[in-house]
Length: 64
Image (spheres, rainbow, N blue to C red):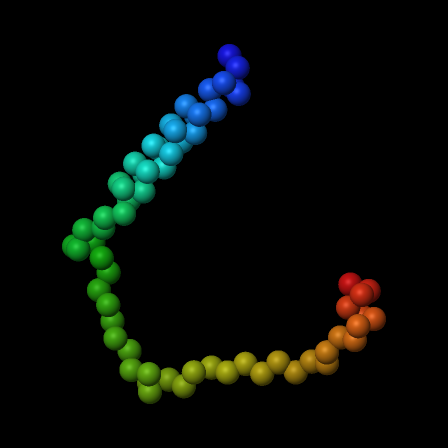
């Protein structure tokens, strides 16, 4: 069996399977969705991260 001659059929079959899978999994019933819980923004302050480091020189970057 020469696979090169059947590549179009293989490609079309793969697209059909992918499309059927996407249509089958796209719709989620409303009863299965998780409830949305609202949280006030003032409840907790946003965490901040401070990164303190020296910048690499051109020679150090070239060594990497």
